[in-house]
Image (cartoon, rainbow, N blue to C red; front, side):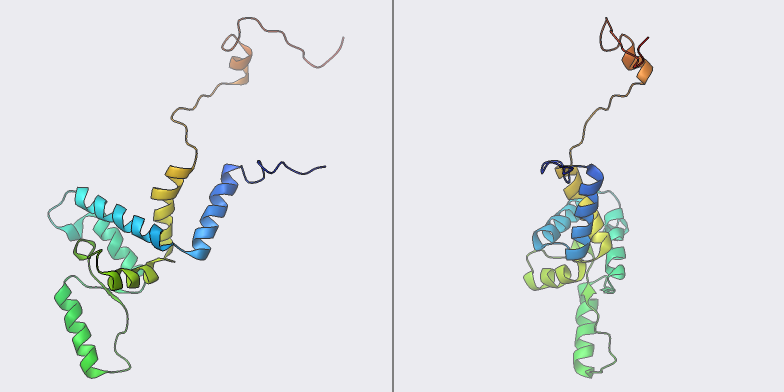
Length: 173
């Protein structure tokens, strides 16, 4: 008694959205989720116009994510190599140990160690999680209707549904 059916317990859309968001924020992205995010970002970058790949909206989003994650955004591979070599020679404990990340158009998805380091940095990043939910999860798994109908009580009581109506107001005379 007073117990919802098992089918309807979490059927309310707000509950589904909230629990899904909470789970992703708590656990972070899975590796397959991260790979999907990278594929979507790469595809969007390729489809965007603009003279410089660094100025495209997706590239700017990537740069913001890198900075939000506390990594160092390096524009060229040579810059990454020079910094790594300088730090290896100095072995200064105060040297910058933050991960260096290339722009999106220069990343190689086939470079497994590089992609694993990026996964570890971005898996719990709120912006990356939100992007994944907004672009991949919710549109694919939430029920969306192409068209929504609306009508007032007066219209529903009119001839919009039935030609003949029989009503009971609730009061007995």
